[in-house]
Image 1 (spheres, rainbow, N blue to C red):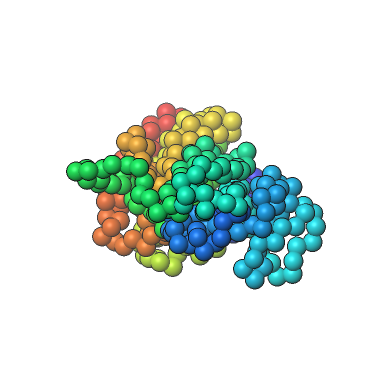
Image 2 (tube, rainbow, N blue to C red; image 1 turned 45 degrees about the vertical axis):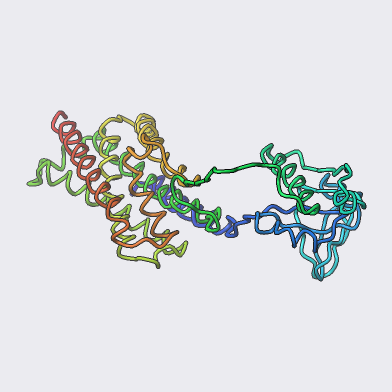
Length: 367
């Protein structure tokens, strides 16, 4: 019956679903680099594509420099790079090549390097390219020079064994797109919206003494609070399911995902009881809701950056829910792999729902 929250709930669902499908679903794991003065066959022989570099051959250093500077655009047509002035019509059927790094080799690079003579290679980079990429390109030029000369790299590693230990999940070759990365955030935003709705309605009923009027009936305090908790959890679950269906995220493990969302809805319902019993009006309830929401959202944003999460992030109540959603919807985890997250989430649900129930009960009894 609250038209404001009804409108906002529908609006948030529509916006979340629309944003999900607008986000790009592709992942670029290679660096596009323009090459001039060196035959593509020479680069292919050196295996630079295996190192994450996607070279594109340019006819001249001038064309390469203009593309990196943004004064022209590069298009790939029939395996050949065509440079077109900015704003001009590209070739028909050509695919644009976004080049932010250029390596301009001199015409005599191969001969000079093979003879041991010094030579100079110009490295053009866009202003937005990170420093570590610039350093990597400089190292790549040296590596190409030694490869062309047929000389080994001047690094001695006698009796030294290198062991690479990857901390956290190794996502090399299995990167997550922006759409997949934001999936847990979008789903969790729906639960957060339900927390605001329930907290606001609870605060309003306490302020208007609606709860006192209900308690005149045979209903007990436990009955009222249980109804609030169950209704809030089911409402949050229903909205989450709508979003999951709309973003096509319920198919990998439907029962497992529904279990995760049910536990998450119960946890949010308990948090809403805490926020609703703390606030006295719309603004104070909004303030307390934000105070609870910000820490709970941190694990969702941490999911955008794969790796080992900090200890304090893993200690947050929402972390098991976010980690479980990411593992199931993105990486196809099953029940056995998600059991630790389910157990931790269940413990948080019991704790937060129980705490919210007790705090709200004392608030109602004090009216």
